[in-house]
Image (cartoon, rainbow, N blue to C red; front, side, top):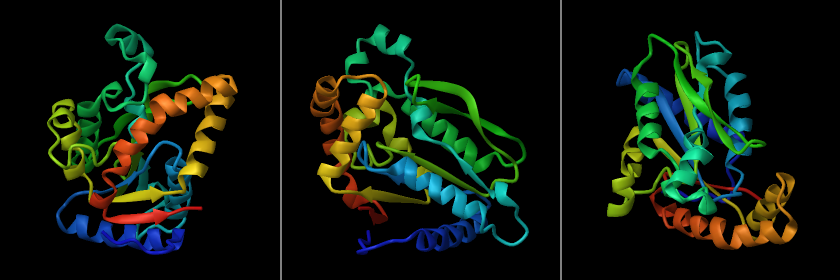
Length: 231
């Protein structure tokens, strides 16, 4: 793993192109995973990358050469969380369909002659939305992001049982987004307030749910291929 002091969008675009060339030698699409703790800014970085990559396609490709497959689309719906008694810690590893996510990544890598539909996540509803996104046949690179892309890579039996151990082998590289903890926590509290929690309830949720998950994600930092520091 490398930990440069700074990594710009142009650096990441160049790295993505290099990974694509290697993947295509093996007959696959390239799949890059952006991983980090809750509130690290993964989605913001991926949005910027999607725009930059669409504007810089490889020879012979159009702007749809890059596709998006977020882990958040594999949140279990609230109805399932209620059934399982897990809604009070929504966002923990066992509140996702990890095997479904791995299966979608596998399809996105290898099924190149037809569209692969994948779920998105509606933040205002806090619910997954089926077939909200698509990996179209012309896509040659897939970006995915989420908290738990490296979970299970250390052989932890609980996370392997949940299916997370399948994910890392489906990614050409993982890029870990690192921000100061105080900044990340402030963003999380503000996000929860924006979507309906009181400031006190938002701070309590961060302490009781988000921060334990953040420590779990942070334990995998050394298994990432690249650390992307953000302010």
